[in-house]
Length: 260
Image (cartoon, rainbow, N blue to C red; front, side, top):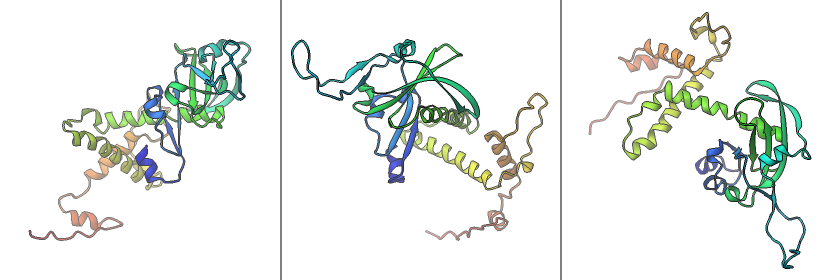
């Protein structure tokens, strides 16, 4: 993220990750301008800052620590804190969501940063609630939940890199090989997607397989793009690269190699 921030100076960057990355090593070292959206544990310890000076009724000392709040799992059961309802667009479909929201601090991982915390009621699955948060406390609950839902595309990317481009079967052993393999596979994925987008979505040339048992497919997947690229490369004349570049719309001049 520090490298991305150097590439995009002055630009706002949003980082979305699951609960494994909601830790102090990440949240306390976010580059300036980076907003983190993630998930937290249902038993996370939340606090709110004091808005006015107060003294201890026992010792008379000035109290400076934050005020502890009930944990998200307790707030979900609190009937004095009612559930709110709204319709969101999640995974391409309108979805009715029951939620509760608050602004608090999650001191151990995030320090003094004020977080927007959203508790979502889950109707299916083993977990009764999910808790999401954002390091920008001014965001709405809708923005936090929809931003986290967009993370699913990242999981699809990981699956395609591992199963379709061979990232899971990498034989990298040395340190440099490990550091280079992931960027190389990601670059190949990006080039293939950009190449397909420059075709202006010409699905007639894709040659999509006809499967009677799969009648709901109406969009193009990366597997379809990869299949089209394989067919295109198989028909190219790789024996004579000059002839191949001559047929290209933007030919590249090949310089003659010089003797040492």
